[in-house]
Image (cartoon, rainbow, N blue to C red; front, side):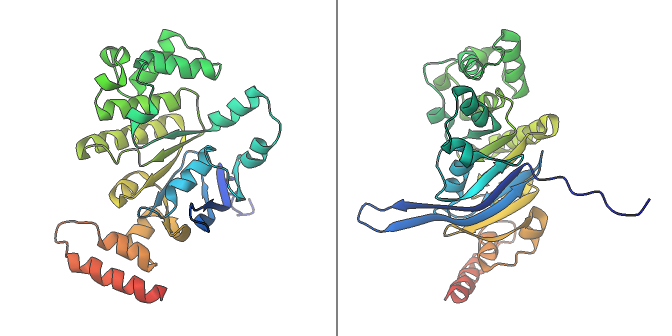
Length: 284
């Protein structure tokens, strides 16, 4: 043995130099994301955090293919998703690309078809992507997210918010994605239901190997479920690294402000005021 370490496995997802601008109604342009880069390991979990307007949701939509980057690349297993989208592709190719990355949105009531029962929702997703839509497969998906027979025959308005989000996760899992992008997926839920959904997602990640990209303004959520954290402000990445490191010993003044703003036992609100003052001074 020569004592050399085996090479690190290549990341599953690579976002490199992503940029997105929007034209404003009164003229000019808004840069929603600029030079955003990060990687996600196979079966890994990365959090993207920041205040409203930081650009994190724009990045999520670029990853899922809902928004096309102005610049930069998104690759899955070395294949450029943006190049695939630009080329002339068959319907089968487009569906295969869509299956790689599935997205779960903040409001499940908006993302689910109100006319369909849970069973019909999953059957539609399975058939669209050419998968087995047998009742046994649908039962397995519902069971995987903790939904039973009663929920299977219910429409979204007959389900609670947590049950609807479980159904949205089951629909995303139905096509066997490599990556789940979750955009504020627990923000609209009660704290106790948030905990249940986060535990469910961790069980799914451990059981299936699906990678998670978790977009959130809630640092407690990110701390609970992610291995790596990317901190965004005004469309750019200001800090990134292992979650335990970023959230326990933040280097950037903006990350320090986010942490100082989270209420906890013994919390001093003035700490957030001082942190914002430091950020303002550093940005001047």
